[in-house]
Length: 259
Image (cartoon, rainbow, N blue to C red; front, side, top):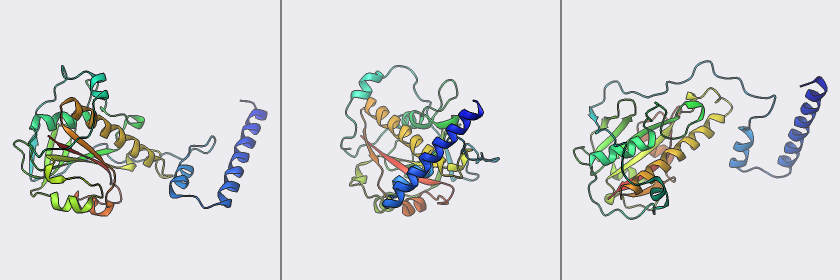
């Protein structure tokens, strides 16, 4: 690009920024609009990348117990078009789900392909997500709070109690938890991304969580399970339930699983 072209591009960017400031000064912005504006990538104004990022995976040093999950089935099953067009949601009837079904759902959400890529779409090849499972009625699993280790395809038992009552108080969604067999909770860690100090990494959290939740819903439909997406909750209360620090890792969304 020549010097004249560079100067022209710079003038265009400055004019655009001046227009945005003029518009924003006329009326107060909503939080969403302000976030979208503040996290834009602008030509010539890309933020510096972090020199250190958070580990790509979270591991617990001393969980109460480790439960290895059955290996997911990678062949057969419902065709992708059938699964996509099948009704999602539905009312759970309070039945138990098999450990193999939970295994399949976790793999479909945040597992790995044969090429060692994450199943869900992610920015820059790094997943923002961690996954927790609140079990109520799963074959051969005690009720409690688990953390899913995608590398080992296993569950780390964090708390040995039925957390249904505490979860019910944290949720704003009108869902009958007593009828659910398990609830998957997706959390995000923004510091895994090099672009993050300006807030851009938070966009990646939401994109990753939506992709993983969609995968769970489609997989659940393919297996004939009732799946319900939950996006409304009291953040601090869910953070406490999942034993998160609330600063470096935040809850994003949940999917309830029933039969």
